[in-house]
Image (cartoon, rainbow, N blue to C red; front, side, top):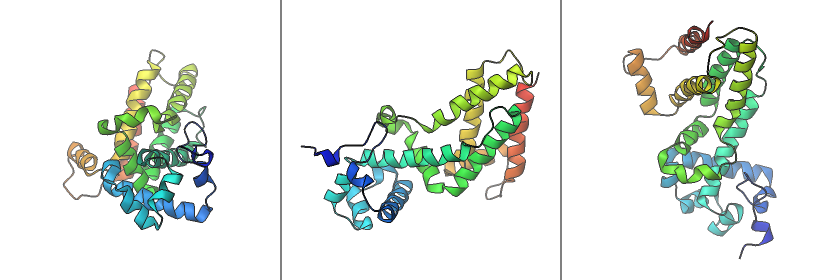
Length: 226
């Protein structure tokens, strides 16, 4: 029987009230251990027993914080979403669109470099094998950018900056796919190697990120220009 203290706080919150009351420093240590485990082994490969042992807590204590391994994983995904939301918070949706898009590209790169484990966990969360979790996320990382794209593209069309005949939804989808694959190239060997193949860069060659980001923005400019 679930006690009141074990109930989750609210929709979209995957931990319990017990975890909310935990000392902040202990909470941070535990979450960092969980992030490292999920990043290294993925959701399916992570052992909840091994995680609890590394954190120095009992299995019972862990389950008093999170009802299941899925809940812990989703809580980590939400942590990454919150960090990215904070990073995107200063983007001006009324600025010239290419400036906005350039900021998105750079922030995606900076987020990936600053939070490599969370970036890897997000990649794991988007796989088909974890589709059973999709309905439990109150807001995914994608929802952070959907409204931003719509607002920025609508404003740009109104100002005559970009083609008025563009389908805003399809345009936002295409641009964001470029952004996501670029971001995943910092998390996955597959996407990193894929990027090297398309750029015809020799294996092991260090890519010029500034030039690549400029090329991505230039592609958007050529695609959207009136």
